Image 1: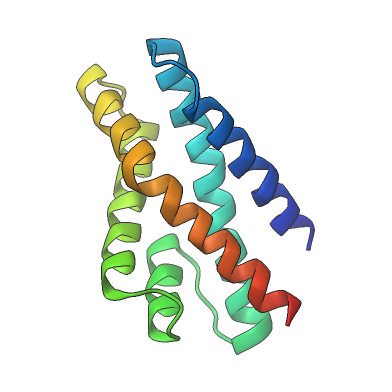
Image 2: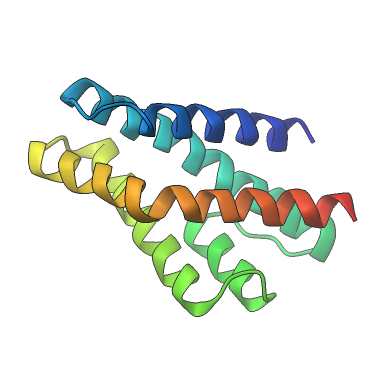
Length: 128
């Protein structure tokens, strides 16, 4: 339950900064907060899948695919989560202005909503 609360707080923090007027500093803050959210998202899925389905997964992509196989994600959401994983990995290891701008746009237009869906799904399933 502690990890789901951390995830909730991280998401709120990401949403707050996404509402701010764009600047390079805001963009970089969004990307950093996205990294925290991403890590908490897949780790919450990992815990959920093991605790509620006995499924072991040891990487983000594996967890997202298992989430899909169990009916929690659509095919499109699964594809987007794989892209989100690649974006997260790229931005952590390589900093390029163009990549940062694209990642910011992806977070704002898609990944934040995907992270919110993961949060709501895991939270709702663990409260039943």
